[in-house]
Length: 222
Image (cartoon, rainbow, N blue to C red):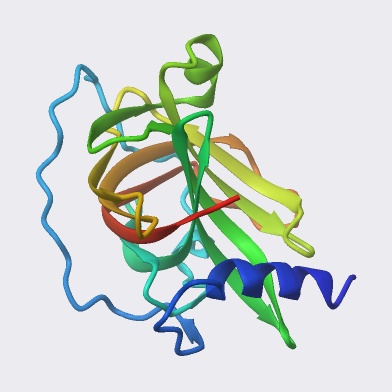
């Protein structure tokens, strides 16, 4: 296992340009929990029942507490939920925004990637945007997509993949977009269904939801 490169990449990505870093923290309770109203969409028939539930999905992982973070309720339907905090990775691609919210596992002096909640190809302006599955986006690139994945080893080995359940309400809202200070704020909700089970010997839940999410992020400049 490479003991240097992953740590350097993660630390640079999380610390550059952030003025309030105070070090590595485990997931902590949120000071406030917004009660966002569901967004009206054309999606109907959402069935959040889960045939397989696992407490592994309700175990909090590590993150760096700093001024840019994502805070959300992570739910396994029928089992429970936790307050989940991740670090933000946001950049512009093809005049759209790509969001990745990540958690990590400490390993000596490294932080190894373990979870990624992703929203892809979000329009570069303030508004509310429905989130579809990756397959929908592949057929119509004008749509935005969402996914959730687990990782293993140095963070580069897949260990479970979930796609958007488009029968449910899924959205991301950009509430503030500042291209002078390169910051973006917003909120989101996404319901996910398993596409690939983990291969590391840990069985994960069939369904996972991220509800009442909010974020403040720095847009990375390339």
